Length: 252
Ligand SMILES: [Zn+2]
Image 1 (cartoon, rainbow, N blue to C red):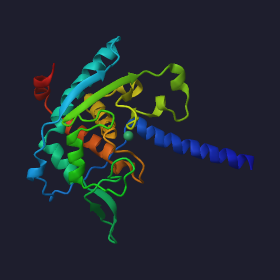
Image 2: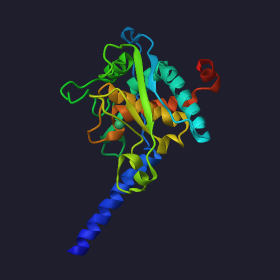
Image 3: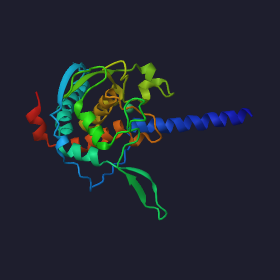
Image 4: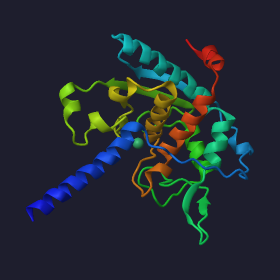
């Protein structure tokens, strides 16, 4: 009986370690799009979403910090370009998720997000078009009445060596970034990841966290199909394609 308990403990430990490892290494988000989607219509002529840099700090005392801060600032520059692009609109609206397989084993897709509603309002399911519009309104709960702005507030937490040594799942080891969308406008980023991330990886996480501030949360069965992860993955994909020239023009 005692052995069984130990085995169960070890199995659950290794399972959680796996989940944990995928977070650390970056979860692969399968992206699929319905190419037949007609998304261009007058109601999508929304104003340009402006990035407003509010309280932002990034560690830059060391050489590594300075180098990573440049990537972080580049990510902020790219954020506005990517989110306002036609390609971003097209991909968010035409996103489709796998909902099963047919008898011959082919995937069945539905053009929708998982947990496609704000906060706990599961009765008001949103279409991809509505989700796109909410993103483009940029109305964070704790930064109300700022339509048309991405109000960006973030800081980087550097965990101590002791905190990082704790091998259980904890914030320092397993979380890339986090928010408390109903009580704070702040995005907390984890140095453990930001010290090695490239610009597009930072951007994916920064947008993921910002999308939380609009009220898109986690909690349904397939987290990889939820708005924060999918939108983050779309942004990552687009950021990789942006030429250095285009970024340079927008730098400060
Ligand atoms: Zn999240």
